[in-house]
Length: 605
Image (tube, rainbow, N blue to C red):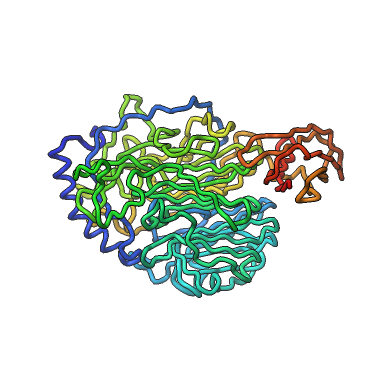
């Protein structure tokens, strides 16, 4: 059994030279779609990987057996350049689901028919299996969200005027192809809908023109008009040289909007807005020591001695979710980078450790916040890989995270990780690689403790990657992922080994193990007035049955400043809260029942 890569300077130099020659081929194939943006794929040697030591104690996990449903198929097996896919699964308030992916049907690295695959769950069944796009033009890398009136909104990888697909009614009707405003051009986009009325659309994406900045656009009226188009986020250039493709995520909850952005050679940065995208506060979650680093003109020399340094950092696959108290949670993989000759940047795919952070934790360096890693299946103290190589996804052994939150503020997390002791042994000699599977875990206490990760599917000979979870979790952890019989993909390849093949797009409902049954099913209505308020806040709420409820006022840092337990009755209820002693600012009014929570923003003046 071969340990994961060997150590030693001589071997490092030799393998680096081999990898560099392969890099030119990788880069030339990637240029067809990303125009030299992706960092060269090179793979320095590694020391043997040891199982991670969790920084927090874990709790036992038990859950029902999953049942997978094949929603679609695709021959385009590069769903993300760097591991994160963003908002591919949208859970509606009535527990129906819309989901999207990049679809193609020909075994080609440049399929002309590439576009958005779409499927819909109406509460009892999914639509038939899908393998064709919904657009009339070539696109891909879609994200989906929904407006307050149940209109579906898909932003895709394209240029104006063909970067938007929408329709007025979810799950049915003809699609309308259009544009994001007048000037908005986004590639590898992310989209979310929020605002007080549920019709504010927030879009981020790489503009794909020099200097390759990530840009932000905003509409307050469901896309009819745009108040911001392709603007640069404040302080962007302070922390970022350009902004990696696909290395960002976005979420919203009412008027709270948050964006996370990072990458191999950049600081992991959080932008958060409390006023629906009008103004932003910036937090450097993990500082890259050279940021902003122009890797095209300088090597990775941290101490200025003229010698390239290997730098621990986060990878570019990340996920963000805003919880019920408006606290941001971030998960991201870890890796290391090295640039001995500019502009080539090498990363270490054998690095392991899935990182987690939320706004209640210290920021600046999260590289020790490891909550998961590759599973030591044989228990011998090392991660032993039979295959001599690691399939390239431009992330570490454990990565591609996706986060969700349920009505009780439990945090749910899925990710993809290498499977010890597996190999595609029937592959051509020199093309053997280890398989990856999807894992699931959860936390009930703001990430202090995590359930022991468990494999979603106990298969040693299927490649399962690019998981995506609905950011809002109900009785199901609504999870999708891609599955085929070969490690790796045809777009970040070992050129002699990896070719396009048919992948299945899978959905599974993992029964929520911590007891949330429906989204707000027990709370018919919640309203607050006056708002803004300076003296007495009225809280009106309606229940579907007699029930004990708890009302809370929570500040922007998640601290509970007021609590009242009530015996609610079926129908209308009212509570008056004296807020004279509260400082002016933005708060959340939470209404909690036995298994649900509903939230309204409150402005105290």
